[in-house]
Amino acid sequence: MGSPVVVHIIDRLPPDGAERLLVDILRYRSSEFDYRVLCLIEGGPLVAELEDMGVPVAVLGRRNSRDIGMLFRLRRWLRDNNVKVVHTHLFTADAWGRLAARLAGIAAVFSTVHSTNTWKGPLHRLVDFLFAYLSTRVIACSEEVARVLRERDHLPARRITTIFNGVDFRRLEAETALDLRAAFGIAADIPTLALVGRLHEAKGHLDLLPILRRLRDEGIDFHMLFVGEGEMEADIRREIEGLGLQGQVTLSGFRRDIGAILEQVDILAMPSRWEGLPMTLLEAMAKSRAIVATAVGGIPNVIADGQTGLLVESGNPDALRDALRRLLTDPTLRRELGAAARREAHANYSAEAVMRRYEDLYRDALGAPQGRVERA
Picture 1 (cartoon, rainbow, N blue to C red):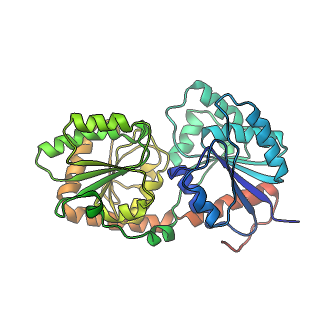
Picture 2: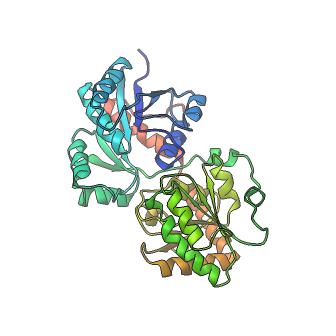
C-alpha cells in the first residue's frame, strides 16, 4: 500500500504570494505522503519549479466561470488518483475543491485562507460559511485573518487553525545575484525602494504614487520599482505620467528574481489596503530590508513598529509619507531595522515549519501517528 495521496488544489500558478508559499512548503515535504498539485484554471510559471522538485502538476482547465461540469470532472479526478487529503487555496479552488472532495468521499479536507479578503460580498461569505462545515480545518495565515473569519464571516471557531506563513530561506540565498542599478538604470547615489506584488488595488500602488510625488517635490532623491504584473498596469502607468514620475518610478513587469531584487533595494514599501500575511514581507525581512507597511491583515503580527520595521495606519497618506521620509534620509535606521527584521524572520517564519504543521494536521485527520519523518 502506497503513501496517502495529498493534493493541493489552486486556481493557477503565477509567482504570487499564495502560490509561492505552496511551492516553498512542498520543498520540505516528507516522504510519508504522495503530493500532487491540481490547477483548476491554468498552470503558470511555478509549474516547472514544482515538477523539477518531483511534484506532479495537473491542469483541469475550467472552461468558463459557469462550467458546472468541472465539479464532476474534479470529483472523478480525485477518485481516479485515490486522493486521501484535499488542501485548497484561494476562493475558486476553496469552493469547487471542498465540494468535490466531499462528493468524492474524502474525509480530510483543508483550506488555507491567505488574506482578509475585504473584496468579498455577502454571497462569497455565505459560501465560505457553509463550506467551513465541509472542512476538517480552515487554516488562517495570521491571527488577524483568524479573527476576521470568526467575527466577520462567522465561521465556527472550532474549525479554525492559525498557521503563519513561512519562506524558504535556502531558495532566497540561492538566487542569482543581480546588479539592480545597472538592470534598471538607477544612479549609484540614491536610495531604492520596491513595491513587490500583483498590480492590484489591494497592494495600494495608486495610494503610494501621490506620496512619492510629494517626496520628490521636497527634494528627496529615490528610485521606486513596482515589481509585478496585473490588471491595473494601464491605470498605474497613466498615474505615473500624470504626476510626472517617469524618472523616479519604474515598472519592472514579471520577474523571477524577486529575492535578488530584495537583496539590492534599500526599502520595501507595502502600502496595502488589505492583506493576509504577505510572502514578500517575510522575504524582505529575511533579506534584511527596511520595511514600511500599512498595519493591515497579519502585518502587525509580524512587524513591531520601530523595531523590525515602520507601521502606519491604512488610509493615512501623511503618516506613510513621514515614514518613507525617515527611511529615505536615515541609512543607519534602515540598517538597524533590517538586521532586526532578519533575526525575526529566521527565528519564526520558515517554510519548513509550515510544512511540518500542515502534515501534523493531515496525520491527525487520517488517524496516523505523529512522529519524526524524513523530509525532501
